[in-house]
Image 1 (tube, rainbow, N blue to C red):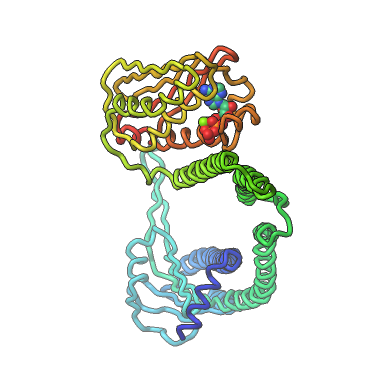
Image 2: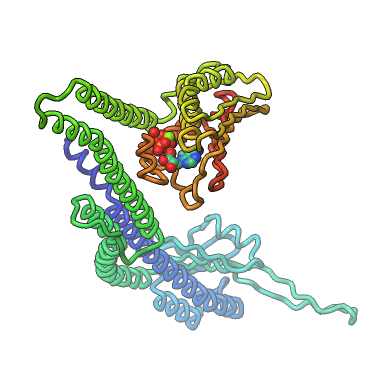
Length: 499
Ligand SMILES: Nc1ncnc2c1ncn2[C@@H]1O[C@H](COP(=O)(O)OP(=O)(O)OP(=O)(O)O)[C@@H](O)[C@H]1O
Ligand SMILES: [Mg+2]
């Protein structure tokens, strides 16, 4: 029981089945409504025609009754024949009633002499001038017509200016019932014909509903098949199809997704090959150094030392690359990883510069800090330190001997700003768009010589974006470069900036 219920619910879930049911029910209901409307209006019309026809005859007959004074004397052969004919013609019964409610004549010869006190008859006698009243009794298949027998006298007015009047007196009532059997027979025949036609129409609707629901929903099958092909890896071409607006939208969205996946896939492959290349370089150097040591016998101690120092440097380099990669991967896990605390930015910068001063001194580069005001911000200290450190390190690394590096700190109501300005050899304009890419270096050989892997700015930018800040660069070849970082002062400002 439960199982079959479950199955029905599953079947009803199908858009195709629902579509079929809707089309079928709509067709069926309109067919049935049409059937009943047509039959009912035929019946109404037939009954109307019949009663008007009989009413006209009865009115003429009522006149004859008055003229031949039939209500008082029923012996008139002509009138009796006329009554009989009428009753025959319409397969009915005519009863003539006088104003005492007594039956004067009954074509069935049953009720002669009896008194009829039916409501319609009494009403008709009272208000006969209102004319004929007819009533259709569908259940028993007859129309009942009550016709007043009216005697009208012309009253001549003595005053010529006043029009002559007629006075109307109801002398009796004709109570007639007319059978509607013929109408009923026609209805039955019509209904039977309609039914056989309906069976055909329902079959047609059934086929039509099946066809429509199948055809209209076909594009969805095609999309599913195309998506499955992509999923199975047979193709990574954008999917196409003859379509409706709706399916076109699905296809567009899917193709956009496919494109994005391809881009991601490409960049991941490029990243992996870059990583392996960068990791391999120090290892190759170490292998060369070690091999050349092993190739010699009786190596002097100093040479050993020198080679081992070089190997140690390569190990440091490998370590740095791995650490940089790890911080990049960590930051890819998004802003949830921010350890926000209240930080004195000026103090933090001073500490960083102190650590970098020995490197600057090696190239005789002057390193200065200019701070316009005290700045306290809600930031992740480690990550923002990384940003400033990378920028200042670059400014020193890509500088001329005897050059200078200036770090400027400032703040407004919402953000604080770090500017790192150097007198270095600048970044060519065509490279400005790429410097934040992982492993990108303007001059590969020079950077490697200096010890760069092209990860620093990528890490810095990620850290800035995690804080909902921005990083900008301006540079002129042979004049210098200025990096400007702007970070919201409060973590809440950072989150409202997202909205
Ligand atoms: N201040 C600067 N002046 C001139 N060129 C710069 C400056 N900062 C960055 N660059 C250029 O941008 C490239 C990318 O910098 P990035 O800091 O990402 O990598 P890197 O310094 O080479 O290596 P890493 O920082 O990972 O040790 C550098 O190789 C360099 O060519
Ligand atoms: Mg760098």
